[in-house]
Amino acid sequence: MHKSRLGGLIIDCRTKDLGKAAEFWGQALGMAWEQAQADDSADYRTLQAPPGEPYMEVQRVDHASRVHLDIETDDVPAEVKRLEALGARRLGAVRDWVVMEAPTGQRFCVVPVVRGGFDEGANVWK
Amino acid sequence: MHKSRLGGLIIDCRTKDLGKAAEFWGQALGMAWEQAQADDSADYRTLQAPPGEPYMEVQRVDHASRVHLDIETDDVPAEVKRLEALGARRLGAVRDWVVMEAPTGQRFCVVPVVRGGFDEGANVWK
Image (tube, rainbow over all chains, first blue to last red; front, side):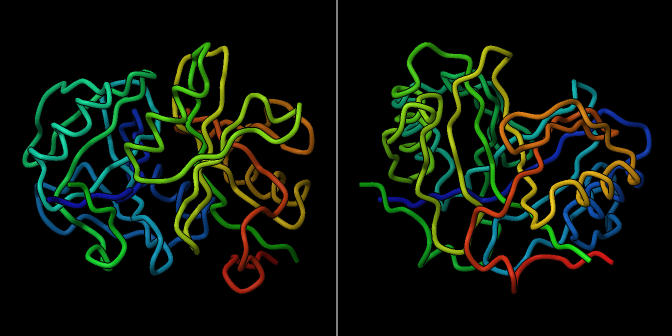
């Protein structure tokens, strides 16, 4: 038995100026944004989503700009297996995330639990 | 003065079988999905997002599959003007929605208010 749910939304931006990208999206969505706090988060800015809503991040990427979903789970390998059985394809891993592709073509990530309220809010898979 | 906030997420799928696309995304995210109820919603399926979270829809499209954001507002023209001042570009209109492109390249829509709790939850722009 494991659990999962929609974790958050990542706004992938092909840009040299991540600060400017975060500023646009923060102002567009009315969310404050935070500077990266560690070296390894240099490619990310967190937007402050309202409590209880999926998290939002702006990411600097080399591929074309897009938006992708994160599915958060308490068991990444089990969730990847479940999604493969539904028709998704495993493309690779980055840190402790697994990158997958939906049968409809969108890429998304399976990640360890990030936002609060997971135990009550997540779906249970047997 | 007008208001806006993140309304929802549209999962654009280039597919002939919208039902199958909705089934994948519904099962992947653990959300029930609904059949279209009117002729003009034949290209859409609603996924039941948890209360208080952004709405989720699966849409059949002719362009490449992707995910896009909707910004909901009580004044579409004023919100479009605000977003243009931030650097977004107006691309066109579909029904009562305006399609825009962010300076970082993603397309998104500005739409009339859809989800509950807008008055309390939305950002106020003066």
